[in-house]
Image 1 (cartoon, helix red, strand yellow):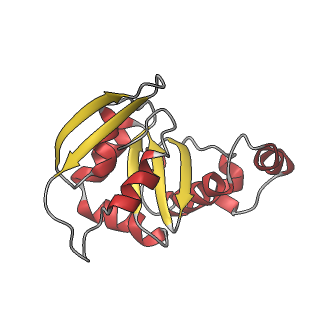
Image 2 (image 1 turned 180 degrees about the vertical axis):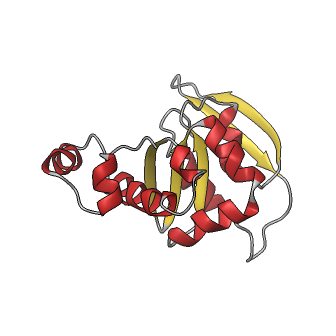
Length: 162
């Protein structure tokens, strides 16, 4: 398992001075450390999770965006049991994102919502924005609201959603 913090720290749920200094310097976040500890706890009882690579975790309003390796995301999406196991460890909804994302892989962030189209819009300021059209209509039970999509889009800092 590859994590932003030391494997020893993740398994023992306590941070060494080196990992604490990484958090203080801003090279990793508290969410990275918390997600690493949770994955390490799950890996004790699940050999599949023990092979995962967590690059980062970002938290906003109780939602967590986990940046994982491509193969890890495919494994999670093929197993509902594994997805629920991960979801139970985190307080809010988890969103999975490939670590080496680009515009096309950004679509995966909206899983399981169906994307109808993605358009690139160039603003006169020279800024490129991404307009995403999703299927369905808004209901109170919708997992993806407009506000949440804006906050999610700010997570990969290279894209702005319209």
